[in-house]
Length: 231
Image (tube, rainbow, N blue to C red):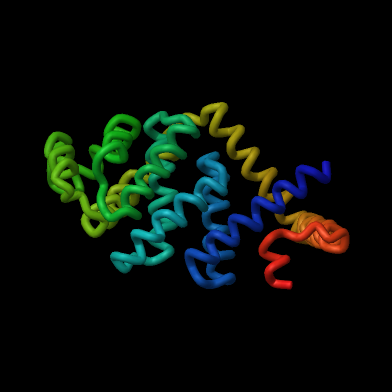
């Protein structure tokens, strides 16, 4: 009903806000959102989770001069590899988030590296191959703090581009299919909300109500200490 439209519209507004902050452009934010949405229709991963991963990866990307298109490619590629590896939607979201968090901090090590090695072994093997090392050596590089964002990001990008096509061979699970349906439904409701302006109107009404209630408080003389001092 209307509640679903409002929730989807608010989620879209928040996602666009995050992308706009990361990219500094409303137009570019719209382009990247559309790309992440199209990916979600294939992967079944919620768009908001892809947006969150994109925003996190963007922090590392800025430091090493990577483009927003490369970040979007990386996010979609990582999700495809995870699905081809048989990971659940929750595992995909968790591993992607931890990897993005690690790269945003500048180094892949500790719990984040362990999460990739244990949760996404296919990706770990592909990363090791791109870096020209074994899995054991990859662990050692991590413990020594040598898996820097400058080194890992481009290697991950190459690995995901090589392995991304594996998704086409992966069987369609019920969880992934449900995720695809959810993404399509939320996308439709979000755009519907934008068209009719329901969540925006509700937000303005709630904000107005908040100001009215605060006005009544002030009118009744129920001032805070700071307000009394200001007066």
